[in-house]
Structure formats: structure tokens, C-alpha cells
Length: 317
Image 1 (cartoon, rainbow, N blue to C red):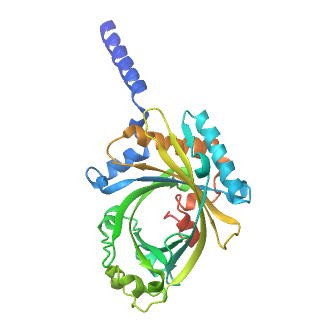
Image 2: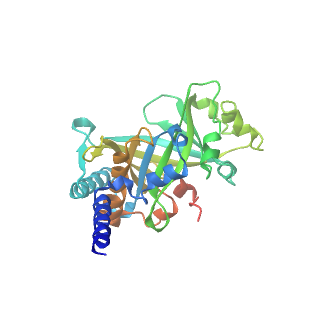
Image 3: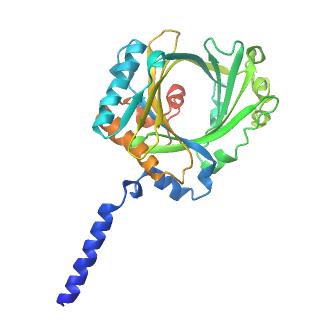
């Protein structure tokens, strides 16, 4: 009886030690592990990486954009250091340099493109590209395989097509992730003069197979974007993750109504467990913990997506 009790205690001790030494990345509740369990290899190898997005309440920051970016980054740096992360800021003339763009999200008045799983965006970079416009069409289906199976084939222009995971705070403040796939190409501004579905369908024919006439006029939801490439963050044993911040206003020079901070983890989903764990921990411990007072009050509805907030398309229940 004594020997049996000793054996039980010994086994219990070994299990306790093993559990204590298990890396945090093996925690069953970790988001990247749940994604891998839901989409076993090689499904996620088709993703180029993961982007982590934190929606920030503009009312908690100075009204002037330059001051808002500076204060947000300063607070992030301080909170990151407390949690054992290291941040690196851009130096010299590049430090918190503002980049501007005009972004237009195009759809029918009834958001028929969105309802069929598409987002259409046209971007004009300030003082860059002359009369060129960057066109992006994204597949945003709720189902992973349907998103990945959407062709998004572009004809008549060089295009870049890639898919990535998007991580943000969902309902009840828990990390949530959705996958989107997008194709981007450039056209001359005059080719989009009529803003009809046919203007885009001649480059991406699948848009003309959605049951809408090529003559369908698209309405624009326009935002003026200010972006700052702040620097990077890292943790022991993890490569630096580039960090950027962006604010949207409805008029040129107007007050910012949507604000976010994002960072990107590139590479394979099935490798670099420490990097995935660190990126998720920064989101929950630093942004959602130490800096939770800066969180956009309605962020749980949008999963980190400014576009969902702009177009009032909340996450499904």
C-alpha cells in the first residue's frame, strides 16, 4: 500500500513538473493553436502571415494627429517594457512621419458586394503615383475555404494576390481571427470616372458574375487616412514585428473618428510558435490589459476591422 502511494505521488509530481515547464505557446486556449486545430496543415500555408489590429478610442487621445500618434506610441512603449517586450522607434526624419492617402470603399446603396463577400477599395496616395489609383478587391466570406477558393483573378494589369489572418478583439474582449484574401492592381484615374461595376469588372471579370449589371453605379464611402510607421516590437527569441498606426477622418484635415495600431507577423502559420505566442500575448497583456482604457468602446463588434466599423458591418453573433 505504501509503495502504491509512493508511485502515485511520484507520477503526480512528474506531471506537475511537466505542466510547469510546458511553454506558453502550448496552452490549449491559444488562438493560433485553435486555428491550427480547426485548419490542419497544409491549409494555412496559403496565408502570408497574420496582422494584429487594435482599435483605439480617438476621444482618449489629443485631437491633433501628430500629438495623438506621439502619445499613443509613448504609452505603448511604456506598457510594452513593463511586460518584457522591447520597442524600437524609427529615427531621424522618419520618426513618426505622417503619410496621407484617400481611401474610397465602393458598393451599391444596399451593400450588395459586401453581402456576396466582397470589399472594393480605391486608394489615392498623396503626391505619389500621379493619376494612378490602387484598386483592391477582397474576399471576406465567413467560411475559410470559401474565402480561399474565391478566384480574385485580375486580367489586363499586373496584380498581387495574397491572403492573411486578421486578429483583433472580438465579443467579450477575447481574441478573434478571420481570414481575408485580396488582389491589388493599379489603373489610371480616368478609367474609373464612371464608378460603375463594369469599370472594375473589366479587370476582375468575376465581379460581373454576381447578378449585377455592368452599368451598376457604385457609391463611395470616403475616408482621409493618416498613417505612421512607428517602429517595431519584439520579445526574447522573437524577430521584430513592424508596428504602424492609422487614423481616419471624414473630411480632409477633419477630426479623426477611427484610430488603430497594428503589427504584422509574417511567415508560416505552422512554424515559429514562440512568435505567435508573443504576438498574441502582446495583444492581450499589453493592449487589452495595461492599455485597456484606450480601447474603442465598441471594438468587440468589429474584430479589429476599421472597415467593419465604417460600413457598420459587425461580426456575426
